[in-house]
Image 1 (tube, rainbow, N blue to C red):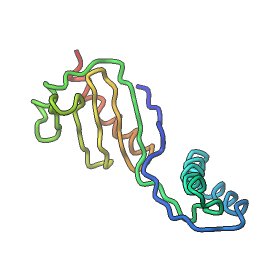
Image 2: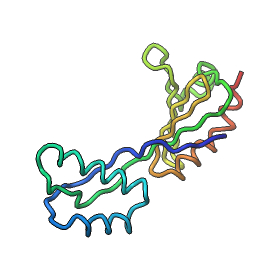
Image 3: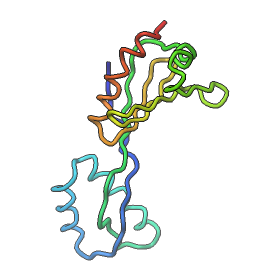
Length: 143
């Protein structure tokens, strides 16, 4: 099973005018991981491009993170939705993926018939754990 983190998503921040950008970058390096600091910097670029050259990100937090995995086997989504109808939402006319929601760890999963899985969770570890927990269930519905 291959778990690859994708883009960090769902950032929320407030912008303020600050003169000392180096001090802000040093604070970001100490309080965020490298990927999170890059995301904060990218969110700070937008206001600068709109004509606010002194705008910097004052407070920032990640809301959710997306984790992608390839199971390397196809999944029969109709059979999965039929057996687990209370937990799986699959409407092929609307979306070609089946949606699952698990409570522990709190995570929303989308499964495609090709075996690709996307988990949207609070952090990378929660998404990885959610994919690990549903792996055996999805293996049951492989071709």
